Image (cartoon, rainbow, N blue to C red; front, side, top):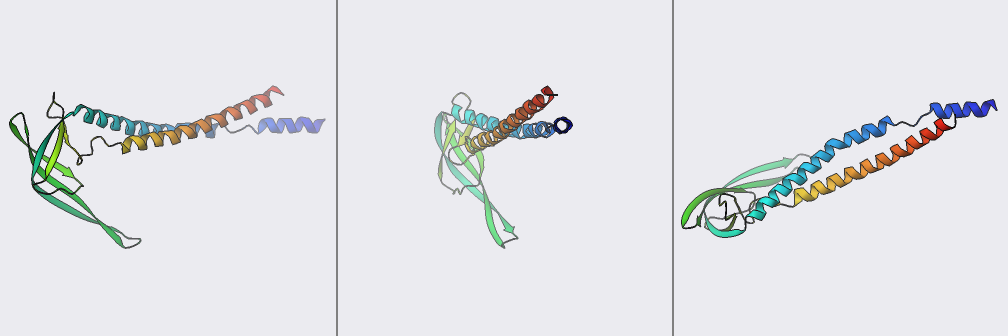
Amino acid sequence: MNRKKREKTEQITKKPSIKGNIIGLLVCVPFLIFGIAMIGVSVKELSFTASCKAETTGTVDSVSCEREIERMSSNHRHYIKSTYTAQYTYELDGELFNDTLITSKRIKEGQVINIRYDPEHPETKYVKGYDDAGDLLPMIFGIVWDGVFLFIMYCLIITLREKLSKRNEMLRFT
């Protein structure tokens, strides 16, 4: 009989670690905030492009290209990253405007480009196909990122509940 009591007291003293689960939950919070920020930025960009309902065309006047060579030392490969800076002209309501576009996509002098703008606020605009406005990739990344960390938090909460219920059971029997 003494042996059974000793085993029960040993089980009670071997309490499941709850601290690890709580620390794990706290560590996930900054990652969730990062994912929410990615979604927020993407929603802001999408709402920006949604307001740009009118379209006009412009002409690229001049283009300059800056090339940067990046080398990867492990396999001795390199790639060239090009950044194009284009000066373009477009017309709105009979008035000519000049603007600058910086893009990683190839653009040529004399090329006709489509410019989307907000009819109520013409200064709100983007060059269709060349600006990163309205990119869905950050939103998808943010949703997947948050989904992974919500799943991890869900698993941590379930194990925390199990540990707490086991702990309560052990305390009940003493």
